[in-house]
Length: 119
Image (cartoon, rainbow, N blue to C red):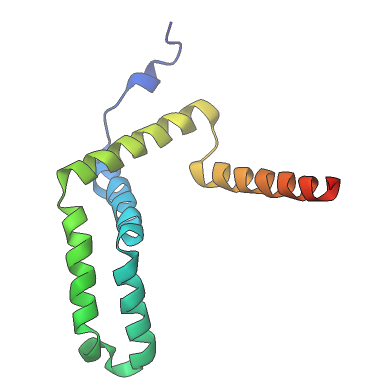
């Protein structure tokens, strides 16, 4: 028996479709295009005031990479599924994903420290 009918609700509010899922897409895109992100960042650091002109090539490559993901319907669907899973996990546990990751990292660090102390 499903005691929580809202768990099976896979519909999205406008803010989820227009803000939260695109945010997830941008975050994942930054990771997937990290080579271009790093190249553009390094160019900007070394160019200061002239970065608009000097870093055009890096900026274009970064935009091309990111846009290829943003326009990919499969990438959108993957991000949507991940978002819905995170939403469901939050509704069950009541702990946001970011806090859960921090807790897991702290537990892993504590476990690593305990293992070293035992040797």
